[in-house]
Length: 329
Image 1 (tube, rainbow, N blue to C red):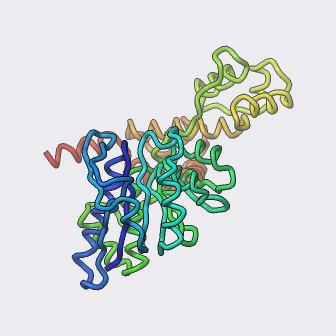
Image 2 (cartoon, helix red, strand yellow):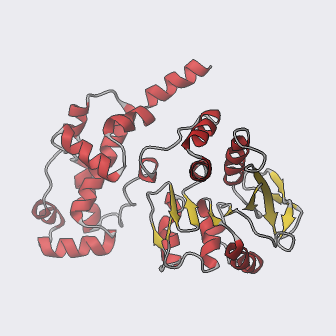
Image 3 (spheres, helix red, strand yellow):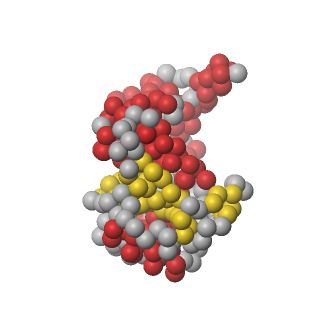
């Protein structure tokens, strides 16, 4: 048997736990008795914990009982973990348990627990897109990849938010037992075996605007109100009443990105909204959002979101979603 430990805690995200557990359980139907996964929930004590959705989960083992070696050890995340103080008991247990584990890591914001234990330093990692910047700020020695669905760096594995724990489990199943088994499990769970693109396709691409009325906010408003027009540093500087050099420096200070990057992100977000809400031809979308051509829009989408505009529309078009819902009903 392959021993698997999933660490749970008060306020844990239930899907961070159930997703990998169900994927590994489904894999057992395709494995011999000596290869199957045996999963145990581990917590500070063997008492019910309340998940963030109100569900109760009960650990199979407490930290003292979970002293042996595990083939896979994962810390499940929870909405409160990024802002929570380090748990001394969990930190101490993780430092010892990960030394004995074959593969160890986290689902979603469980990466913060690994960070508090010093297990992310010098490693490539990911987490939920909403918390990636905070993870990078709290643990600057980690190399955070905010767009990745999951990342493997040696024995360390980390996944993006919530359902990405299933993607991580499928990847581990594929590594150990072949892609045929991983594909069979994915079909059973009604999932794709490997997602196209990264987290960016699920996240708002533009950062929040700066203080209303500021030169940067005026530039941002101009760009978004005239997204199909050509914008240069010179034209934006004129709108802000600044020299191009001063605008570039001030924009970077206030918004954290260059004016050129803001314009590009604004075009991507405008195109995304248009692809989601309309059936306009791709050529019309590209022109209306300032890309100039479908080819240019396709290159930008592929580089930034990991999918083409057509693939993005197929996944997120509202009418397609409504039709699918009606068919199931």
